Amino acid sequence: MKDKIELLENALADIAGRYEKISLSSSLSAEDMVLSHVIAMKKLPIEVFTLDTGRLHEETYELMNTIQEKYDNQLKVYFPDAANVESFVSTEGPNAFYNSIDFRKTCCRIRKVEPLKRALSDREVWITGLRSQQSVTREAVEEFSWDAGFNIHKFNPLLSWSHDEVWQFINENDVPYNALHDKGYPSIGCSPCTRAITKGEDERAGRWWWESPETKECGLHVAAVAADEISSEVLRRNVA
Image (cartoon, rainbow, N blue to C red):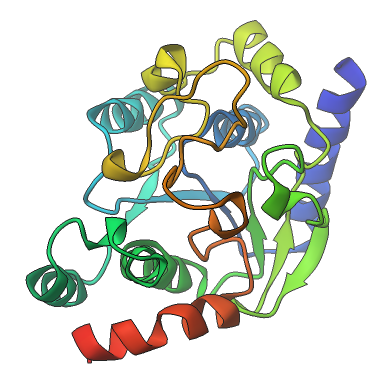
C-alpha cells in the first residue's frame, strides 16, 4: 500500500509539473476524496471542482462544507443551465428519467455533461477517480488517454486501486467522506437515481438500478459524441 501511495503522489506531482491547467472533477466519491486529500496535503496546483445537479443528497452538501473547512481549498462548484433544466422538467416532469434511458441520459446531459464541458473548456488535463473494478463500463479505461468528446487529456491515477485500498487510505489518513457510504451506498450520485445496495451486489448496482449494467453511465466517462447521439432528439424537443 505504501508503494501505491507513493506512486500516486509522484504521478500527481508529475502531471502538475508538465501541465499548467489541470482539474480534478470530484463527484465527492471516496476515490475523489483520496485524490483531493493528496492534492491538498502536497499543495499541488490542481483545481478541484464538483457539479451540483440540484438533486444531490443532503449528506453530499454536508461533505462539501466539511471539505471547505478541512482543506480551505475553495472547492469550485458548477451548476446546470437553469433554462435548460426548467424546459426539460416543465415538458417531461421532474422524474422523467425513470421513464426511458433517453430521458435519463438527457437529464444527465443537462445537469452534468454540459456543466462539465464548461468546467473543462480551458483545461489541459482532466483528473478523475475512476477505478477499473467499479463496473463493466470501466474495465477498458486507460490510465492516461485523450478524451475526444471533451478534447482533453484524461488521467485516471486510481485505476488499479481496489475498493479496500481506497478505504484503507481514507481510514489511515482521516479523510472526510460522504456519510451515505456508512449506510450501504458505495456509489453516490443524484438522490432519486441512487440507492443503497445489498451484500453481493456490484459497487454501482445502486446507480440507475432500473437499467442494465451496460447503460449505467451518465455521459461523463463515455465518449461524449455517443452520449450526444443518445439524447439529441429528446434534447432538441425540450431545450431548443
